[in-house]
Length: 334
Ligand code: NAD
Ligand code: AKB
Image 1 (spheres, rainbow, N blue to C red):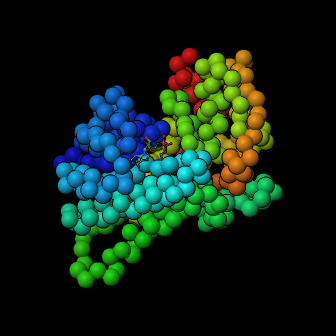
Image 2: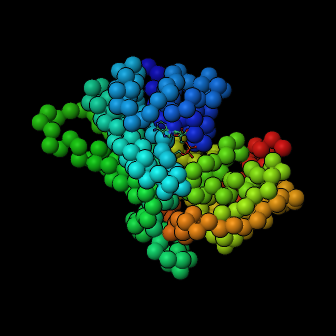
């Protein structure tokens, strides 16, 4: 029996990498859902594609009745900058939408008497360092420290992690009838991701990827954060590989539900220096945006990913140097 995987937000940056990676696996059927039609080359790799809103519970019900879902990768969300611009919409999509997907997963688990794996991409935005010196002195932040986010997006992500715990651990306790199967919720707190094939939009870590993609196109770029701004980043292939590794990990090996993962933590100035190595004519200026700067100033400079390494063998393949030399620059196709 092939395994059926529902991917929400499948047309986004992670979705592009995930659909490609999963389509190479035998006995896997991808059901892709996004507000926007999937790019043609991605749609061709899916068993079914649905254009629609994760807020539409009737639509989710129809998807569940047409497909026996084994795993959900719930990627659909509004990212941090967009969420600050439209906080009510962000709450509706990021929280209510996630609740709808968790309901779909638990209903599927109960009707089929099996565990449904639920992979949730959280973010370094769940952290909130109160001021710059605290950020600079915090070192590698562990999962249980500094979880006082100040953005709608970070608050949404942290709360949805808790919702995942609830659906996995507590949802059944007051139930009269004991049922087999439940939601096996697993979550990664991703750093800012940089892809060679897609350009981000709506996030606050976007400056790294935007700088590089602008340089590759010969366009000038005004970076919206100060040169000394430092947050964790990761190359997209490592992020997609991490999701697949966590999905495949045996349940008994997992000691927590939400895991940090890390790769490299350059400052904006160091990203520019690396970009100039490959594009010496890149035209980059700094024009810090007060609010966006304020967001990244609360995110950690680095995170501790000891638990991910110990529990499910996470390791990054791309450090800063290799991410540019072996993945980003060749993938940009210039
Ligand atoms: P993205 O913005 O590229 O993709 C999100 C996708 O969700 C888009 O294709 C969009 O059309 C879709 N979408 C938005 N609202 C929807 C709705 N109501 N119904 C259905 N689809 C909807 O984002 P991404 O970079 O691919 O991120 C995927 C997930 O990973 C998000 O949950 C994001 O918070 C998380 N994440 C991303 C990063 C990063 O740097 N890219 C870092 C940490 C966490
Ligand atoms: C954003 O900037 O909102 C995302 C993230 C780090 O979660 N890229």
